[in-house]
Amino acid sequence: MNAPNFTDLQLMQRVWDVEQVKKLAAKRCYYIANDWREKELSELWVTGEDAKKTASFGRNWGYYIGMDAIRDYYVNAHNDKIAQLPGANRGDGCLFHHPISTGLVQEAFDGKTARGLWYCISQETLPTSNTEADARWYMEKLAIDFLKEDGQWKIWHVVIATDLQSEAGANYMEQPVDLPDTDNAAYVEFGTPTLSMRVHNERYNWLDNYPPAPVPYETFNEDNSYGPEGHPDYWEVD
Image (cartoon, rainbow, N blue to C red; front, side, top):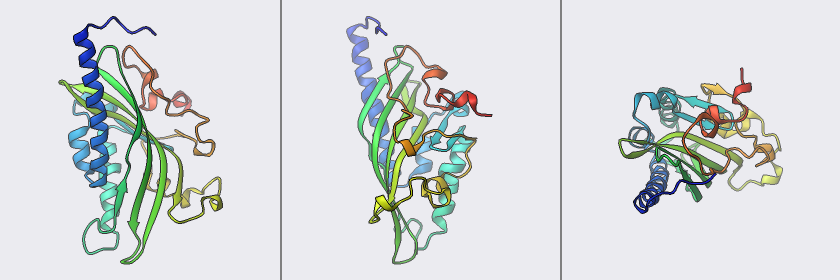
């Protein structure tokens, strides 16, 4: 696909747009580390009524669709879980770190949307008592669709594709190849999504190539979306 013959001013705008998209993705990492989930949804995600209806948050086992469903999972259910953990104060002993690297961003030729893919070597720790905790490593790809609203870039679709997870200090070679769902901390945390489907099969690592790296594109459509409609198996799901 050949890019249009952009003017110098247009090229400068596109460079600025990509930097703003990268900054937005990086800002989300710090919100996660501070456990500012409601703040993230309110400040970093789409606000337009149509966009809110089609916003999505996907993991290996499906998608939450619409900002209300995303908030119920990502904020409300999470806060309820944190409130039940041991500790004198909410969040004592909790660590959530999902830094991003190797960023690859493509802005649509029409400048209305952008897509980005990053890799994350992440960890999450939750207390199990006043003196012990469950700490886990997560290796995952992060894909995001961004939408420009009134000149500001916003997060629209998110997919976190977990390649592997391991308890800190454990021997990963002793973990079953097919980890039972009840022993899969990420599966348990994800709950029951709006759309249940196999988004990324971690058994074969990247054999399914999902989410794919963004490539140059003219404008947003369902085929190039990181939302559920853009998944190659979406139209086969009942």
